[in-house]
Length: 186
Image 1 (tube, rainbow, N blue to C red):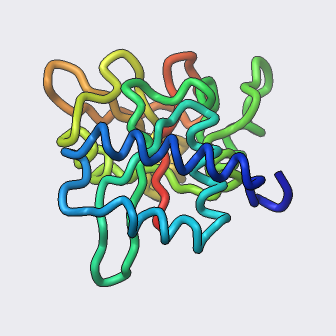
Image 2: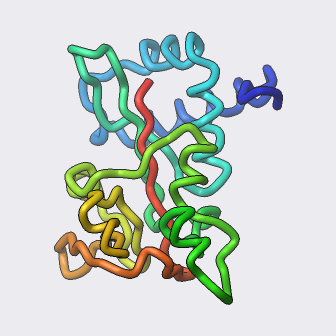
């Protein structure tokens, strides 16, 4: 892998895996044709690399919508539980640097940027729950509004009792059962 571009073999394997998931989960993307999605991905190899990273870290990305106006497909992490390869991270660099001891390995904002993806907004998290049941045992950091973050907090969601719950924590906190779900537009 060089400069966020996959090898030919990695690209083929990733496209095949995404196609299989797409075909098995038609309810997530009705009226979207895989051939058009694949063409977009082949034309944007850096986005395919981001999907590879989402997959590598346990996100199981899948297409959840198409925006006609922007001509973009939206992929979201659709793993049943928050991605295992992105757990035990605090919210952002400021929170990481504020910890005096027992620092986590990193933070979700830097990891998302490195992967070329964004954290889900609360509305996107709620929309995801309409497509299945996610985070019934785990939780996921979401994009936190600046006014909350400025006061030291960060938001996360989970799905319990058939309901999406939005909670707050100190941004410097981290847990073995909390990661983040990413979104990617192609």
